[in-house]
Length: 162
Length: 355
Image (cartoon, rainbow over all chains, first blue to last red):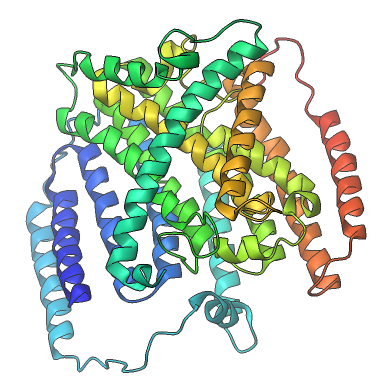
């Protein structure tokens, strides 16, 4: 019962925040709405008993990515008023409506499997075993790390003075 | 303690206890800092209000409450109003996982220390909101410097915490305290130094207080704030200092553990001792410049923290389970060598600005 109430509050706030990110003209406020959205999603993870994932969500998305977005906004000139418009509004609306329709159709028509098993406690050793243990996903972890390194190097190469 | 077994009663009781504890300790810290600084600088400090000046923080609080609340005309009013709250609430949330003694905490989270790091990273958002919404170039520059410093020092801080976690084998703060039959300050002398310095920078204490010192960019991100909203930022600062002391106590000084006295008393004694050490540093060490602050984080603390993590991992791997006493001397020797070595790299060069 309590979890259901928490879920609905978090779900409504996160959807409202996500809409605010898109609709707000003031780009700084949009970034703040994005932070609210990240936080409510962390809350959703908590209701799913994924405590480690929730903490990492706050740490990475709110603590690092959102901060970087705001720093980028502050370092950009003439961005305060926001609302840059161009001629692609109509095509974007079509694509977005199609995408939304496809997503909703998939969500409604898929028979989602709901696990009846109790959540495992504590989660951290199991996660560590999955990520780094034998038969785990160590290759994916390493590939993600290399991908991030490539992105950083690419950014440096792009902005380097000749 | 059967009454506390009920979830909601436990929740309510500990919420009230934590709020009372934090507010009392912050009042105490403000008093201690002013009197102790006075003692170090051979002057009296505040001694007129109440016995020994004990009511000075109360008088300050009342004064600041009665001040006029000014909002910049061209600022973003909603964000301006929200910023102190966004900075203040996460600091309070951290205390939910700090154990006062065995079992005496709001929530014994399995990911305790990760929760602390995650929640404390939200404070930067509040600082940003304050700096932006004030519509003032000094507050904007102050906020950007503040956030640059926070983000930079989070990395060595996290690495130092990681080496503690390696030794304890758990992210839960209760488990970390229980693992300290030898306080981790002895097993992790370099980790302790890195954590302490990085945490000082995180909470903007001297020598890293250039973001809000009066003489630097007219006091940084909170210039436009007055009255109660300014008091919220001020309170956030001291709550952060309390968090710093509590975390150093929990991670490195053995938390509530100690002979004779009851555990929670040991915890409070250690917290106050750490805070007095912080105040002592404030009275002793001059302030750094912004380029020195950033250089120190990236060229000094980060490599040292990485090396420390590597050495700790090796030690845990070699001596599985119990580390011998010898490791204490080994680690202290390693720390001395590394610090000597690194001090060769970071010469400051009299007054020369290197970017």
